[in-house]
Amino acid sequence: MQNVLDIEGIKKIDPRDTFASTELLVKQCKAAWEDISKLDISFDTNGIVNIVFCGMGASIYGALVTKALLGLEIAYPSEIVTDYHLPTYVDEHTLVVLTSYSGTTEEVLSCAKEAKARDAKMLILTKGGPLLEFAKENAIPSYIFDGKLNPSGVPRLGNGYTILGLIGLLNKARIINIEEREILDAITRLEEKLPEIKGQAHREFEIFQNKIPVIITAEHLSGNGQILRNQCNETAKTFSCYYVVPDLNHHLMEGLQFPKDHNLHFLFLNSQNYSSKIKKRMQLTIDVVKQNNHELHEFMTSGQSIYDDFLEVLAYGSYLTLFLSLRYDQDPAVNPWVDWFKEQLKNS
Image (cartoon, rainbow, N blue to C red; front, side, top):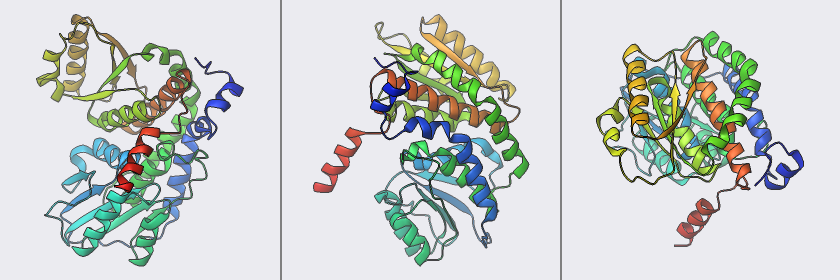
């Protein structure tokens, strides 16, 4: 098992330097927000009645976070599509937001073609590839980032670009309305807190060693739940699942009795910025988990705003799963089964 503080040992397991990419999260966020502020985007919102976000894996994180953070404040009904095809209602009154870090994701490219055929309005976020060419050929307002602050080149390690980039792009296009100062202040506070968050993740990652993390979250952190689940899968190579309060209170609690032999360890993502009803539900849910003799850990954010909260959890989860991966002697950058699957799919 790898000593996660042994720099030379880490380099052997992590040749693509995902460690550096993780450390650069704050700089990625700053770069993305500055890039967006310089964009000259002319976007006509007239006639838009709904939004469809298209993306796969880490490239959909921005949509997950946006929907979670803004909740009922988003002016348009919105749907997330992680598939090849758009809903049948998509037409010229729909905004289709296409995100692909690499620009080569076949499901997103399929949706892009359908969006064009149906005269839908579009926004694009990508680093390059065919999606970049599609954006240029069709003069689609876009955020094209260089990814320089993600030396590993792994999309899920470029969250600053994809998440803050998408929030900034939607804000620039006047689809959402966020005070720029709120984001900048949250990024600054994350920079100040990052050493503490990293230290906490280092102290706590062994809690989840050889365990199945069951992530519990709510409201503005619900997007973080799926992100952390994915980070457990891809980075730490471990099974994980996530549930959202209040929905889980209507089913999951009855499923805590069996099997008796298990390796579940619950991780509650908690916040003082939750609404009063959700705060009460989270505490009661913790009580139910304890009464069913399950191990649990609580990560309580210290943020002044919901934007602080989401960034804190994003950083904590990134370090937590990185340390787990290194402890398991696993290269955090590679996904051999995903690559194998894609190759088999292509060959067939």
